[in-house]
Amino acid sequence: MPSSRVLLAVVSLSLGVALPAAAQTSASERPRTVAGVCGATNWACVAECIDAACVDRCLREDCEQALNRLKACTEKAGCAPDDTQCAQRTCGSTCQRSFEPAPPSPEKERTDPCQGLPAAAKKPPEKLVGTWTLSAASLPEEVDGGPQRIEAQPRADYERTLQVTPEGCFILRTSLGEPTLGRGSALVVRAWGVAELSGENRVTLRAKDGQAVGPVCGDKRVIPLTRKKLKFKGGTYRWDLEREVLTLTVDDASKQTFQFDREQPEGEKK
Image (cartoon, rainbow, N blue to C red; front, side, top):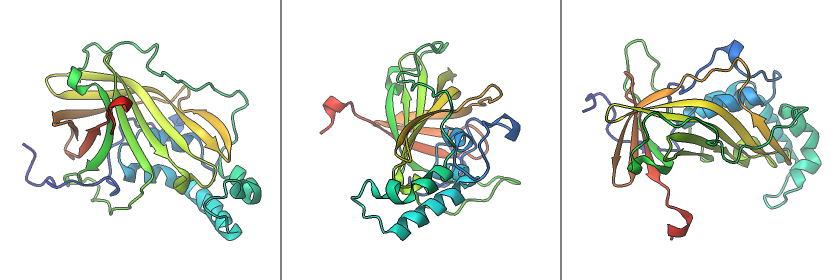
């Protein structure tokens, strides 16, 4: 049973809460991004997140000011919501300066990132297999010397899903839409790897690779999130499943909790 200090009620997904990064790297190991623009460094950071506050922090590093300039440009231009060409026509150069240039040798999208990964030593139970959508999160337990609780910062367009395959591969997806990246830009940021199970209810999400895919300033991009020196650390959680709700609790002193709803296959959706 969790400590009485753990917040019992879960807050809605729109309330950002801090999560110890599932895959942390030092500054020298992160993919390099030109200062003052949004790029691979930001997307690699986002790929490590489950909660909204973590995504917010990743976008504040250089990227936030660039996105604010782009938003100010489209607002000044008075682009109508249904005018899909306005932003590119009036703010195309501002958009190009807001994002890292496309790499000279474009990378192909990994449509099946689990292909080629080694199978987990212990396959996940059948009830854990599937696609899960994050629906709620708790505030972490306050720990002496640890960070203070973070004020909620609602961000509606961060959609996160966790997919677990029968072989033990996992894919963590975060969708960043136009409200965050500006008109003409939307990325699906993915990290994938092996879900290592130990004991009865402990799982470590050990990421191996990742990509950010989608239009940037109207042009399709496939952005690799790993470089030679980038190392994923992995995050360990205790998991529990009840009535099609998956609960992951960070296996550290914070005891932070995340709830996921099972996503029904397309043929079963009403």
